[in-house]
Length: 232
Image 1: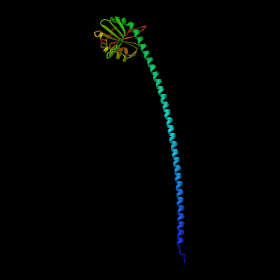
Image 2: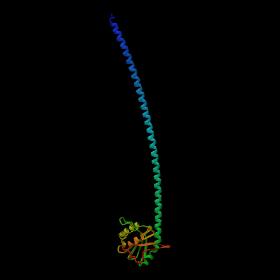
Image 3: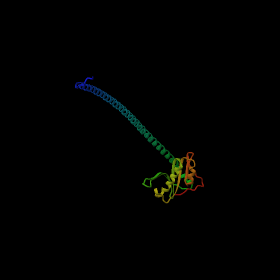
């Protein structure tokens, strides 16, 4: 015959179950606390690693920016030095070109009267670097040789190119506008060069220009006796 279950037995069972539940809840709380602590630790590690990496990247960016600034400063310094060198070289070349141009003019000008008188053009006066500075009609002539009815305009170059000839031809079309004193003169053109590019003398000849070139210690007109100059 079984022993009857009393109220005390039920209470003991309940009490034991409650103790087991409390133990399990406590274990769950402990485990949850451990997991939370582990999560916090891991999050802190990740945050620290992220901060460290960000600091490294920022430092690297700053280093590269500093290098770029230094390189830019060095390039700007080099460019400034190069610009100064180019400027000095340009001035030297301009000075040399000017001196060569003056040399050609000084070589040609004393011979101009004789050269054109030998060609039947009775030139009596020469003017070096005749200028008109008025806006719109400004012009400079290397050598201007004239008498009472004829003007000869001479362009002097250390090296005469076809572009020089073309530019001079344009200048001749504007000559009388720049120098109206010679409006009614028969005007001829002449180009002179210490060196003359290949074929340029023939080109100038065909355009009706006298060609003056070195001959010994002086200069001569290269055009043959059949040449007929163009008058402007």
